[in-house]
Length: 246
Image (cartoon, rainbow, N blue to C red; front, side):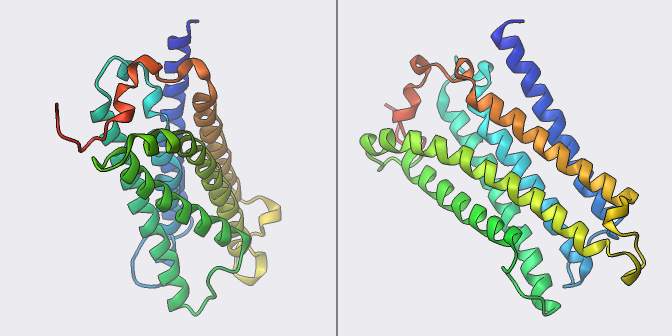
């Protein structure tokens, strides 16, 4: 199988796994956790995993591999910059909404914020993501950005993108595990204990496996040197998206 064909097989797998992640996290919270609301109650919390998995993992991962699609290599890079930045901006908005959902729920229920390892990982991931997007906007999209600055920042931007994605995977996996420990307590709240692997635990654990599988496929695509956009086609790297046409 040729390199391009292997890429598209990997990319199709990436799309399918991402779609399954969104379906699984939505079904878990709508079926076993009671659905969704925005009233400060337990149903508001259910938005948190759905928004974080959708934004911080699935949309982020798909935005990261966008430049690796061979179909885009022979085209002007400027529109793909806009798609890349726009997809990441949507991911950032969903991440912020997911954080609002959990902080508002905690405050309404008098639950402390930012005390667990999951919360530390999550807030660091969100902060780094925000900084990465703002720096990317300033360096690669604004016409006032110096060419030397863009060239200097590009390898850092690429490396930080992969690092933030790995942090997002760790945040979501730890969050699923934490939620199951809190929710499946056995006799104290009428559920089977997590250690007995009730159907909800099996389903949520399967969601975690899907997230890891999605992450591995994305990282595999990003790490394959043969799937990098050819340098000859990267003339748009030194040109800001919002600059004036010559």
